[in-house]
Image: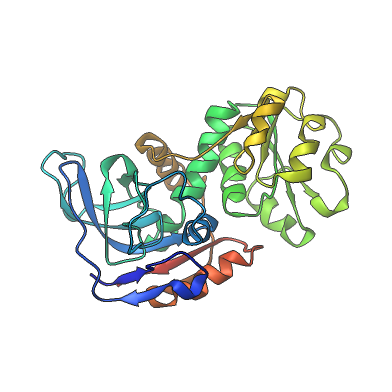
Length: 307
């Protein structure tokens, strides 16, 4: 199998294009996906550096990537939800780290996939799952956002944040985002009612009144200021800093979930959720894609295309 892989942890120079990767296994409840596009996320750099060794078993060679969009090549004998030829997208976080999405094929547990929304290209669908699921689960589960809530989204122009703005708007919320001035129009076009400049001082001092819910995507001083931003500290959620639990809020670690993927697809097809692509790289340029994401301040998503 052809794909990008690495045999040791390290910087982006450990990534190599290989034509000799072993064919992935297809278990009874596994879908073998022919990859068309794979999203690139900051967590990919963390895994490559060895940052998740204490959480998951790792087996070399490791193919990076958790986001995917593609076409079903084969299915295990226990599956009835998918069939060869189906177009799918998903967040392929397995119980170990080895078979990622930056390759010709990826074996995906059925819980990780859903049918690709027809309104999205493969590149757009491949860029959506991890960031979209993170935003959706934080807003609907940890924060219970609903009609009329005033919701503050920090780092709103990033991958998770931009999805969160759109999803919160679809849920009926009044959304306030934080971003640099150059991204204010980007967010108002996505439905944000207000946009605040994070470089202009603490956000608690810029709000006209406390909000109903806060989604923290920054941590540090931003999270420390969050109790002053919200009416009830139990409605603070962070996806970057588990210490939010100590202040009475909720830490969110995204998980694969078919229902949530289906909801993201429904919102996309209803015109409520768009996925801007900052740049699409060919598979062999995955190193450049990792570098672009690692530099930060990317507006939109970075993907690699396969085939």
